[in-house]
Amino acid sequence: MKKLKIIIDHTRCDFCGTCVAVCPVDAIDLSEAKISIGQHVCTLCENCVAVCPLGILEIAT
Amino acid sequence: MKDHYDVIVVGGGPGGSWAAKYAAENGMSVLLLEKDREIGLPVRCAEGLSEIGLRRLVKVQDRWIAHRAKGARLVAPDGTSILSTAEGMGFVLHRKIFDADLAALASSAGAEVVTKAYVHGLLLEGGTVQGVTVQYMGQQYRIRASVVIGADGTESRVGRWAGLQTHLPLKDIETCVQMTLTNIDFDADNVHLFFGRNIAPEGYAWVFPKGLKTANVGLGVSGKEAKKKKPITYLQEFVKREFPDAAILTTVAGSVSSAPFLKKAVTNGLILVGDAAHQANPITGGGILCAMIAGKIAGEVAAEAVQKGDVSQTQLAVYEKRWHQAEGKRNGLIYKIKEIVNTFTDNDLNQIAHTLKGIPPEKRSVFRILKTAILKHPTLILELSKLFT
Image (tube, chains in turn red, orange):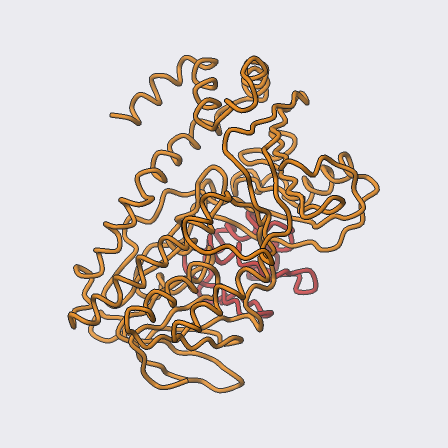
């Protein structure tokens, strides 16, 4: 079975930090124009997917 | 940058600059760190605030003001439009210039301002925050401080690193998109607020004039609602309907807390300010003035603590107490009203608008509007009566 993870469409990200605000395990790292999800910390709660104003996060394999 | 300061402020928005300014004015050596390359950019803000409110805090410069609005036009889901002029004049700011000038005022007071400095951790020793780790120009720095002030916005991580509970539940975050539109024909004398389940559920859409032909047009919906349909989709539909011929100058995403303010906003060696402490108005999302008020208190309390040689949580809790007196009580009440307003159906909102038609515009204050809402919705009397006991 392939492992699920959250993926970001980096080409459309505005680096607004909304996903960071709702992450219960502080798995998302955001600097000025760089965002990454610590997959080993992520619990796949999908809060970030829910709140992204632009809808550019999704859960996938 | 030195390797030690009395106070380090993380985040160069209005809350951070005001904290830095007041800490410096009270004799502290202060470092203000901003992750972006320029203070004030990108602008993730509708830029509107109350003229009287701002004048209470700072000498207002003309160059900060893009436009003045005489009142607010509230539009119900059925299109009923209600003009309110009871809350006084509003400013629509140039946040880019405003934020840069506040940072300049902090600098004039003696604070050292550094941009493009990304704080990625705290120095934590014996349960006390003792500084930050920063990435700056490709180098890593460990900078010590007696007190760290986290003014790092809704996406704050500084508090979490010190063990404070700052992440927001989906129902208590407004997720927003805004476009700056130009070449539009609209009533630029007023700000315009649109309500309705199909426009912006558990939120609202705004049109804030930045000039006669230009406006910030955006909306926010709760995280709960954003799960079903994205703010960008709501906004594209809204703009197509209201301003089909507009030129879109910018599109920005962002979010604001609609949570009750953080009860525990300090720990040993750390104070949280502004959006990082969920201090924005839970209904309007306005956060500039309350962040500046909190920043001033935080700067003063940090200075008192350093001078006493006691930066413990107990000492820094003076900040929580003073902020609660200045703003917190009101914030708590507004949060409870928000929870009730979010239960309103479109029909409830239409009825409220129809009733308000019978009241003159200069008497349609927020208080009066809420009172009308309560009378239209008698079960709310019981709910609201609990708030005042």
